[in-house]
Image (cartoon, rainbow, N blue to C red; front, side, top):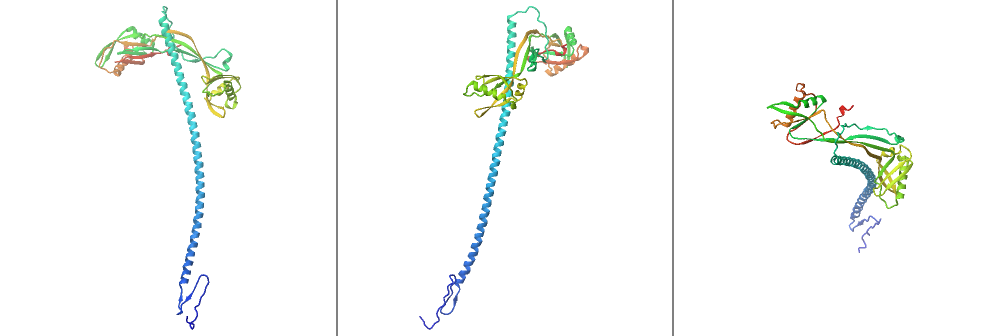
Length: 385
C-alpha cells in the first residue's frame, strides 16, 4: 500500500455507495441502479393499484353474477310454476272434454241399444202375431215438456218424449220419389196413373203409384231429472272400509262453499266406483251438477270426482202403427236413357211442377239411376192438427 496517497472515501447510506478509484474518478453504477429501482417501485405501485382496481371490478362482477343467477333462478321457478299450472289446466280441460265425449258415447250407445231393442221387439211381434184387423194410422209428435201431478214438481224436472222410429223405404234403380207441398196434387197424379215426360232425345212413359211403407213403432219416453239426487263416479278405490269412504263422500258434499248442503243419504258401490247422494233441501243437487268435477281429499291426497244429475227413464204406450205418405208418389217404369242422373231428375221435376201436367210445387225429389238407395220416412208434422 502506498502510504503517501490519499485514503479512499467510503459512504454507506444502505442504498448508495460511491466509490472513487485511485485516480479520483467517481463511479455512478450505484446511482443508476438506484434510479432503476425507483422506476420499478413506481411500476410496482401502478401494478398494485391496477390489481386493486381489478379485484374491485371482479368483486362487483361476482355480485352482479350472483344477482343475475338469483333472478334467473326466480324466472325459471316462475316459468316452471306457470308451466305446471298450464299443464293442470290443460289436464282438467282434457279430462272434462273426455268426460263429455264419454257421456255422449254412452248416450249414443244407450239410444242405439234402445233402437235395437225396439227393432227386435217389432220383428218378434211381426213374426209371432198375425194381426187381422187394420192397424190404426198414427202420426208422430214433437217432444214436449210435461208437468208432473205429484208433489215432486219442485224438486224434479219431468220430460215426456213422443218417439216414432223412422220407416225405411228401398228405392230401386230408375225410380223416383216426389213429395209435393199439397196432398191433393199427389193424389190426383196417382189417380191419373200414367204420365208422359218429355226428354231432350224423346219421351218416356212413367207410372205414378202410392208409396207403400212398412209397419212402424212409437212409444213414450218418460225422463225424470232429480232435483235432490246426484250421481258421483270415479271414486278412488282405496284400501279403507266402505263406511269410511261413504262418510268422506258425505262430508265432502256437505260443505256449502262447494255448493253442497245437508246430506240425507249416500249409497256407495265399490265395484262400480260410484255413489248416489240424496240431499235434504231442494236446489242443492242443481248447484252440485253445475261443476262436473269436484275435489276429493283422503289421507292428504287429492282426487277428482265426476258429478252428474240423477236421471230416471222408462217407456210407456209402446205400439205399432201403419205409416202412410199422402204427399209422396213413386215413379216407376222408366227405361234406360242417355241422360245422366242429375239431368233426368231436373226434367222430371220440371214436368211435375207444371199445373198443366196436373203437378204443383215440389218439396223434395230424388231419382236413382244405377243403384239402390234407402229413403227414410218420418211423421208429416205439417198436417198435424
